[in-house]
Image 1 (cartoon, rainbow, N blue to C red):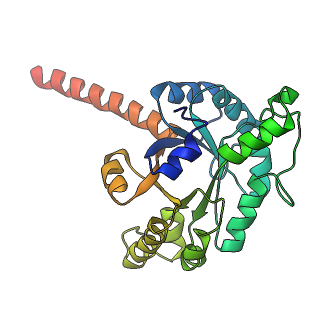
Image 2: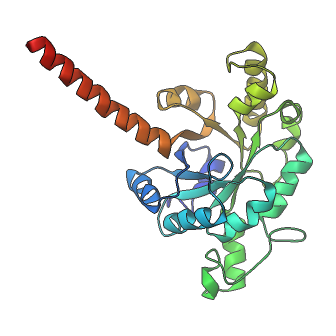
Amino acid sequence: MDRRTGCRERLAAGDLLVGTFVKTAAVETVELLDRAGLDVLCLDAEHAPLGRAEVALLAAAAHGRDVACLVRVSSAGEIGAALDAGATGVVVPQVSSADGAADVVRRAHYGPGGRGYSGSTRATGYGTGTMAEHLDAARRRTVVVVQVEDPDGVAQVNAIVRVEGVDAVLLGLADLTVSLGADDRRAPEVVEAAERVRRAVGASPVALAEVVPVEGLEAARARGVGLALVGSDQQLLRSGAEAIVGAAAAVRGGGQSAT
């Protein structure tokens, strides 16, 4: 199944999709990560300096490839622009109620009060397809992920997961920790809140998304994660460089001990 067009279907089927955040506006990054075989790239327009132009550039690089491209928008008002740029779907932060989740779904789909239509966008093939074809494809393929990351969202999570059109809930553990006044994700109140979100998602048809370390993938899958976002392009670059520095240090140390 195509990683891009089948993303929503795979989430609904309970598959494990693995991806990473992209925080650097380099087309080559998208090309390399796609070639590596990741299921999903999430362009981080919330916590990285990616504006509409940068999102459009990176979405264009992903659009002709198999990899699914999600955009974590800075606000709900950016949903339409991200999808027009050719993104597979959106991740929307700070969703704290069922009404908020319903607003996100409405903005991500065509219809009354929802996403506006233009035949001149990348998403619509720059006018090369019909409106009916695009509307059908968008209805079937657009992925909507809402991020629960504060006490209000945790309190309303059972209602949020029942909103039709929500495909996944991303547990924003770092922001949840801060919003609860803690400074450690292992604090009892954070663990309790996180488990409440996981239980609610697990009892619904919605997929659970989490940010996890690569060594935590097996445990994440065991607790029901369907979309695992592992690190970022920046983290991958840094860890690769650190491996080189470590190897060089070992060689230098070995050379010194040999003399």
